[in-house]
Amino acid sequence: MQRSLISFIFIFFLLYACRANQPSSLPNIVFIVVDDLGYSDVGYMKQKSKIHTPNIDLLVKEGMVFTDAYASAPVCSPTRASLTTGKYPATLKLTCHIPGMGMEKYLNKLNKGKKLKEAYFLDHLPTEEVTFAEVLKEHGYVTGYIGKWHLGGEGSIYTKDGIVNSAYHPDKQGFDVNIGGCAYGQPKKYFDPYQNGTIQDRKEGEYLTDRLGDEAVNFIERNKQKTFFLNLATYTVHTPLAAPKENVDKYNGNKYFAMIEKLDQNVGKVMAKLKELDLLKNTMVVFYSDNGGLWGNPPLKGKKGTLYEGGIRVPMVVNYYGKIEPGSSCHVPVTSVDFFPTFIELAGFSVSNYPQVEGQSLLPLFYQKGHFPDRAIYWHFPHHRKEGLSMGAAIREGDWKLIKEFETEELFLFNLPQDLGEKINLSAKYPAKSRELLRKLEKWQQKVNAEMPEVNETFNTNDAIELCGEINVPLK
Image (cartoon, rainbow, N blue to C red; front, side, top):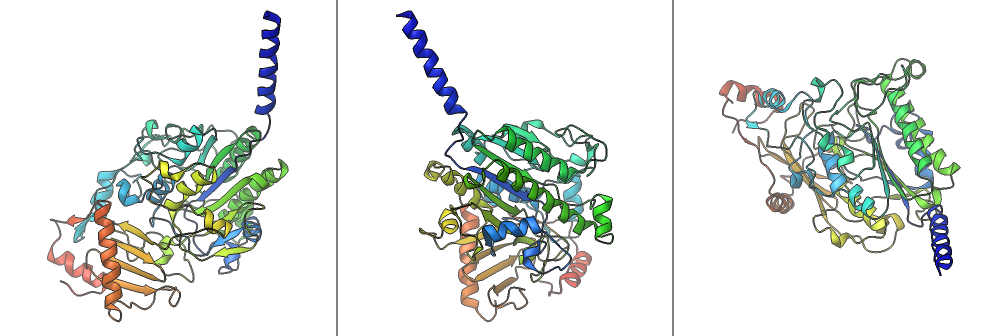
């Protein structure tokens, strides 16, 4: 009897071990989130002739490009919080980038001479928020975060290593592995030694983008027999602009173009590893940027920090061999809140278990079948920027986009298919459409209890005259 029991236990563990060494039937997910990469800062857009991104272009050739993909904010932290939780930044109370200089210094600087003060916002992602990593980990995924987090507290530039409060790091939000994720919104250095407490220095002079690419490849290699979710969040192409000399020389001193080349090389490195391990057929790869670019986004108007298209429309490509039609494109507007339900549904779990999620699963668009609902998407950005129209809120529904500027209460209405560059404000020509969209926008703001800017008591007449001269509107 005892011998039979021992034999049974031995066979059971043998079968379990064999099963454990077999690749899972659940899909792997690789989510590449680039920092500050503009809509036209990729080769396939053919807007900047000196930009060459053959590996990213190959993703387009073998997958689906989204022409109307948006970030949920024109700056980084809100978008990153939004895509991780499936909630809009206004709902999370995290609508602005978390200031490296510290909250008090930031607000004093940005509010000076302004009619309205910036609205309240959090300086971290609360740990009680449910992230897609926590859900996937709960269902058997190995989860890895490699790169920029920027959701872990304010005042990072005054730290020696980017750690303000480690309780808010990725490993406390469902990620088994965290390499690089701390409070930094930009790297203190792009070359080793990195002065980042979540990256162990390895070789002096090593380039950060290459290092994060190596870590991504190592994560895939270590977990090739498991089901994994990898979030590769490059610090590239955020300032300070820096790249290896040979790359900079190749572009006649243009560090930005050199950084994009290094980004592309490391995207290629990740894809090559997936191919080498025969994982491509069971891995969805998503390439995305967290907000508009800083260095011009033709044919769009504006750049990072604005509610014009150049601040919020971003490159996005999805690759899933055998599931997504190669060389296809989608023109349906999508945004950051859609990633949480997409990844959860892709893994075979019910999004209905997470009623807090405000996005829609994109799988019907990926597979070009099933129903994807008509809807509006929203932005709430009660913060000042010098780059153009900011301090406001926006809605896009169908072809139409409305922006409301908070200080002047001016409305801007655009028909995007007809005027992608947002050159003609149609609010006076189509007042009924403006009122309709404004009602929807304000109803949504009320629903999510959006934080609103307040009157700046230090604002005076001289400031008002200067302000009106800057934005070319009459003083009200």
